Image 1 (cartoon, helix red, strand yellow):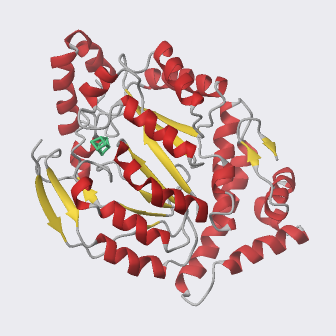
Image 2 (cartoon, rainbow, N blue to C red):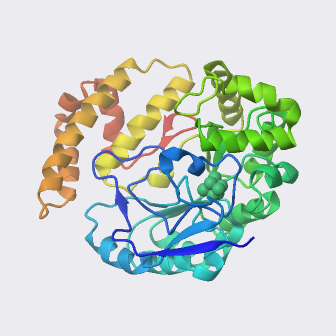
Amino acid sequence: MSINKHFKIIKKAIKKHTQLIDTYFLIKYAFSPYMACEHGCKYCDGRAEKYYVAGDFEKDIIIRKNLPELLSLELKKLREPGLIFIGSGISDAYQPIEKEEKLMREAAKILLKFNFPVAVMTKSSLILRDLDIWSELNKKNGFILMLSLTMLDDKVRNTFEPNASSVEERLETLRKFKEKGIPVGISGMPFIPFITNKEKDLRELLTELKSIPVDFMFYGSLTLRPGCQKQFFMKVIKEKYPNLLQEFKVLYGEDRASGSPLKSYSHEFFNTISKLLMEFEIPTQIPHYLYKGKFSLYDEIFILLNHMTELYKSKGIKINRLLKALKNYSNWILEEKKYFNRRRNLSYELIEDKIRHRFKTGEFNDVLQNEKLFQFLKQIVLEEKTLDYNKLKIV
Ligand code: SF4
């Protein structure tokens, strides 16, 4: 496939989450070497007007040529520890153009000189080219491969993700990373209604993933934002699955701005997949043992509390008191961060020391207003324990 390269000089490489951290992908810092994507997934929301990618989404690729030099400069100035996430919803860092441009290889070499854990999300086995560097970085700071995969049928993959790696190449990539002791997770997004969402297929996929074994799996259903993204996808359905066209029209007939399908469908699908993941004992969040000690203590607590609300909810445990404590904690940490962000000479460790001290004296319960949670977190903070997401037990 011929593409048009558009070289761009950028002013800033790294996007920061300086207030509250993203608790889903655990993004503290993020960057992406390209914009638009040759992988050409038929459902990609990079086609939606909301993201405005100029030109032909699959062919007009923007190359952030000066990214490596900016990275070196910006990494030196980061004031807090945390995960650097490479990827985006509108481009894949290891799309074919990377073979020639090698921006990721350059970036990986630079990242190796610093002390940040890194996660890469991709649909490409090209990342194996850099396994040597990511493996070294994993030993030093921690690395997570987040590979996108929702199906085992390569014909279906070829229809919806034509220029991404084959199913077998992706499974092999997971195996090779795992062989090196590198944590691997699956970005199971999006599962396509009527096509990749059947329980039988999900079981087969999870059996395969469990055999690797993957450390976690996110999941999400297909969203079709009204406009270019939806029109493009519907054309593909009309051509390849004409018998399903009417069902898709009904499912996405509400034309919600978020692109979500009917609520009843989402509810049923999420119910099915979350039960299966529980049965296979595959956590649906990045487990605590993978991020413990890799963030500041205050970010770790924030991530953990957010994950606990989801975990407990999925097990039918009441979470009202937990949510209240989470709100209290969020307000407290936002105030602390406001002060910290305004004063360049302060170290994030001061906030950590404050937390540890208040857990020792018992004062942190004034923040949480939840004695049971306070006692639980005390073990995490002072005794370096972790929460097992499958068993919901402290270990
Ligand atoms: S790999 Fe990701 S960014 Fe690229 S086309 Fe597919 S969904 Fe979009």
